[in-house]
Image (cartoon, rainbow, N blue to C red):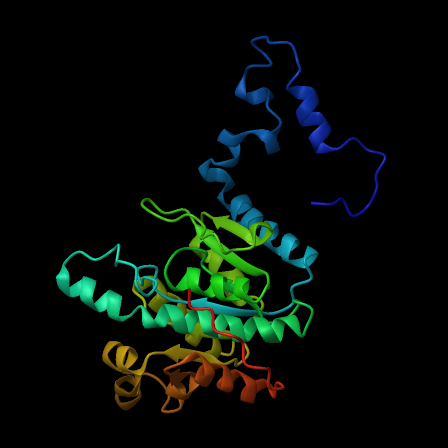
Length: 287
C-alpha cells in the first residue's frame, strides 16, 4: 500500500526490521519486548477483538479506495452448485447429487449476469458496478468468472472456515480479501452495493438475503434492486406473503425484491431502476 504523505519520521516497517536484528537476550526474547503491532500473540488476544474488527474493516476499505471502486454488484449464492457438466462435489446422497447438478443452470446464469454487470462497469472505467462475491466456489466462482470473461476486475470476500474455502481463481488477486469476522465481511458486501443478486443457496445465502432485506426495510440502507434468481426454488423455500398475512411484516415488504429466472431478465430490473443505457449483448462463453 503506497504511503500517501512523506514523513521525516522512522516508519513502523523500519523498526520491525531493526528489532529483528537485536541481540538475543532474555529481555529481547520476552513477549513483552515485541513491538505491539508486530506481536501476533497480542493482536489475536481476546482483549484486542475491537482492534481486529477495525483492522478487518480498514484493510479492504483502503484497497478498494486505492482502486477507485465506488459501487458494486453483489452476487450471493450457494458454494455447492457445480458448473454444468461437473460433478456435485458436496452431495451427500443421490437425491442431493441430482438436485445440485440440476441447479447448475444457475452457475451459467450467475456468470452471464456478471458479464452484463461488467459491461456496464467497463463503460464506467471499472469504478462502478464492479462484481463482488464471497470469493469461493459455486455461484461465487461463476460471478467472478463472468467478470473475468469481460476483462473486468472483480472482488472476492473470503472467510476462514474449518473445511473450506480458498479463493476461486477468477477473483482479481489485488481484490481478494480474507476475513475472520462475518460481521465485517457483511459490511463490505453492502457498503458499496448498487445491486444484490441472490441465487439458490443455503443458510449463508439466506442470512445474506435477509440481512439485506432488513436493512432496506428499516431504512438503514437505501432501496436498491434485490433480484432473486429461480422462481421454482424461492417459491418453495420462502413464503413472505404468509408473514404479510400474519401481520409480522408490512403488506408491501415482499415488493422489496424481484424474482427472475435468467440473467437478462435480472439485468433488465437493474437497468430500469437506474435508467441505464442498453449495452450490447455479451458473447456467451460457455466453455
